Length: 362
Ligand code: COI
Image 1 (cartoon, protein in one colour):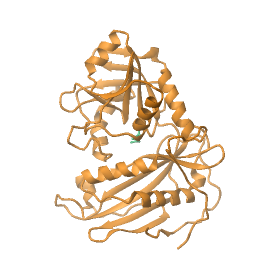
Image 2 (image 1 turned 60 degrees about the horizontal axis):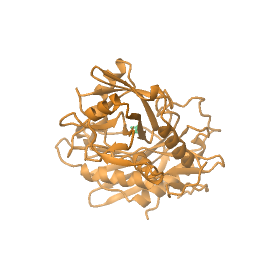
Image 3 (image 1 turned 180 degrees about the horizontal axis):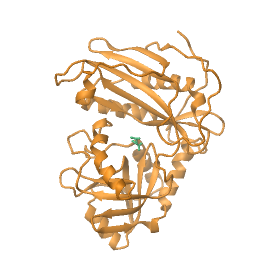
Image 4 (image 1 turned 135 degrees about the horizontal axis):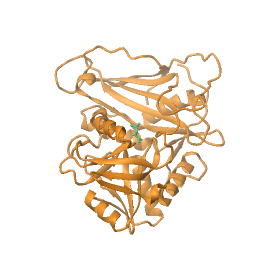
C-alpha cells in the first residue's frame, strides 16, 4: 500500500461547531488528495490543510464534465467512537462511475485507509448530536489542460469533509413533491446511474420550478416515455402499496443507492414483500384512487429516509397517509440511524470503525 504524506496544521484552539449546522456549508481544515497520471498510476497521496484549488482555465473537467463524486457519512456514537456506514460500497460505486466516464479506478482498500486517516485527524469536527454527522465528499476530476474532446490523462482524487445536520429544512417532516414530465434527469444507457455532476445539473431547472410552486422537490419520470417513476429529488424512491413495497428496478438511469440497498435488505429480513420492478405513474394514481397507496418515501445518504406527504401530477393532488410520516418510513429511519449511531448492534457488517490513534507524520 502507498505511503501517505502528512502535512498537519496546528489548530489554535478547540473547534466550536455552530448550534445549527445545516448541510454542506462548513468544512473541516484538512483534505486527502492524490494524483493520477497515465503510465504512472495514482501517486503522491497526502493529507494536507484545506486550500483553494489552483486550476488552469482549460482544465478538462470544467469543459467536458469528467467528474465523479460520492457522499457518505461518519457518525459519533454515544461512547464517543467514530464509525462509517458502508464506506466500501461507496468507493465501489465510485469505481463504477469512473469506468463509465473513462476515468481511472481507485484502490478501494487504500481509499478506505486514507479516509480513516483523514477522519482520525478531523475527529473533533464530528458533531455529537443525534441527527448530525460528518458528511464525506470524495471526488475525482480530469485535470489535463486541453480543449480537445477525449478522456483526460491526468486526474485528482480529493476527499473533503463537512459537519452537517438535516439535509431538508423540514427534517423528518413529510415533503411535498411535484411529479413532472417537462424535464428528465437521465436516460437509460446514458450516465444516470453514475454519481456525476451532469445529472445534478440536469435536475436543477425542474427543482427550481417545483420550489417556486411550493414543492420541496421533483419526482423524476423515465427519460424516454415519461411513464415510469425513477427517483425523487436526489433520492431513490419506495412506495408502500397495500400488499407490496416497491422500488423502481435499476435500469441504467437510476442511481444505485447504498441506502436503497440497505432498505431492501432490511425489508427482506423483516419479511415485507419487496419488489424491484417497473412502476408507472398511472399505477400510482390508480392505487391511490383505490385507497391502496399507504406510503411513499425517499432513501439517500443525506436524508437517510424522507417521507413524502404530498404528490402532485398535473391536476391530480394526492395526500399520502394524511400528510404524516408512514409507519414503515419511521421504522426504517429508526433502524438505519440506530445502526449508524451505534445504538443498535450492526448485524450486517455495515459499520467500519475509525480507531483513534496518534497522527502519523512522514
Ligand atoms: C443523497 O441524498 O445522499 C445525495 O446524494 C444528496 C447529495 C447530492 C447532497
